[in-house]
Amino acid sequence: MDKRSFLKSLGLGMAAIPFAGSSDAIAMAAQVKPLLKGKVLKAGDTIGIITPASALGDEDAITLTKEVLTYFGFKVKEGKYIRERYGNLAGTDAQRLEDLHAMFADKSVAGILCIRGGAGASRLLSKIDYKLIANNPKVLLGYSDITALIMAFQAKVGLVTFHGPVGTSNWSNFVAKTFNDQFIDNKLITFSNPDKKGDNIVQYKDRITTINPGVVEGKLLGGNLTLISGLCGSPYLPDFKDSILFLEEINESPEKVDRMFCQLMNAGILSQIKGFVFGKCTGCSPSAGYGSLNLDQILRDFIKPLNIPAYTGAVIGHIDDQFLLPVGVKVRLDATKGTIEILEKALI
View 1 (spheres, rainbow, N blue to C red):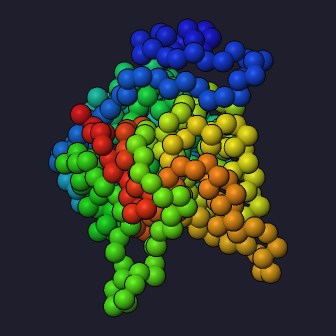
View 2 (cartoon, one colour):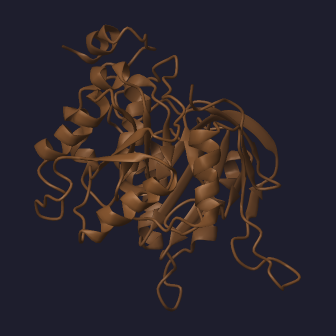
């Protein structure tokens, strides 16, 4: 079955997809509409925990994840293969895929939390049963390598997923409050960096920098820069037209970050977006002697000429206090204030 027939079989409708060999053959898959949304979570619900990417280091990762979910009043169901290892991966592709499918198919599971990211989720994308996902929309939370699933689910079936902490993240009070506001109270949250001035007269940590001022509204899309750039040319990226793009990264040299921004530019993604937010690029500083560009220069070269509202420094990424962002919903970006205001309920 070809892509058109497959997506049509979902009964969700789709915009035209470029034919292979056309000048648009490397463009992103068209956004499926309408959006699919999971249900609001409540105390007593069962949350499934899975490892669709890298293997866990020890049993404590599972114990801590369970403690986090128990704190919010949830029951926990373990994926069958979360303790498996296949090289650096949490089991074979078939095992990780089975856990993913099982959690979506299980009517007793209200939401899914990925225990960790790492690598390997992209290996699953061509094997996922997207009709199963479409027929069982529910909360999926993770970040880093889980970006592959976040993008694919948005592209293929329009499912609203959530870019935020994994089970092994540091669940600070800041993160816990956002989790409760989003999943239990289903609030329209306005995300802004936490106030960390302390005894100082100005804030030194987690400052934002405006690249281009302004306010704009659009569909929120994004995640890890490496994963999104690596999916360019595949059917697993959504349509970025008129979107607000957010990105984060970790442990990549400025040369690689620059190359990935080149990929986004050459794939036509940057020319389509209406707003831009860069989170944290943890461990991405130039080598000694500044033998390369730095992140500020890269963003100035690629983002500033777009003349769209844009800022950097948002608490998104591999850090303790991080935003929990609903991917696919409409938001309002204020690049001067450094805020992302959710305008559309992410759950039903």
